[in-house]
Image 1 (spheres, helix red, strand yellow):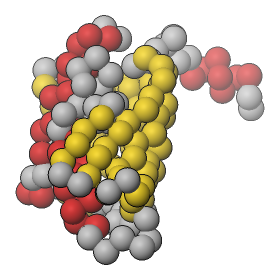
Image 2 (cartoon, rainbow, N blue to C red; image 1 turned 30 degrees about the vertical axis):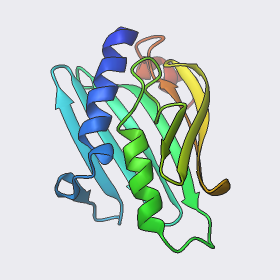
Image 3 (spheres, helix red, strand yellow; image 1 turned 45 degrees about the vertical axis):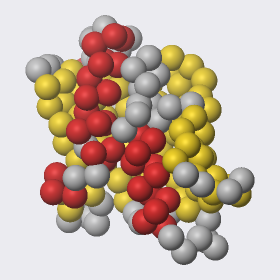
Length: 168
């Protein structure tokens, strides 16, 4: 299992290098209609996979030494009465590029760019957390998303023989 600080540092690198970068050339369109973004560094591998458009949903998984160690799932949307969806997602990418190193879930607690304001409210630590993010324009909420995540499969090595013998 990676230590929390190494995981935090890797998440910051991975997220800045993928969706937050705005680089469309690193997107992989999957046969199921989803989009995947990948990043690797040392023993860590990051895979972000999402569906959408409007609304959108997806999940990020971090693998450590080839095994899943962390997951975050997310779902969000721009309000239906908003026409400038690209502008909203441009603000979101800017906010996500400012990911805090101590809580690398989404963007910072607050970010302002012109008439737009981004806010991110979360609880928990990297092993078990949840949060919501919003974008407002001139005081009107125009975007929102929810997310939840933490460590996976860290308490013990899975004994499939024991599981299979008990539940057949």
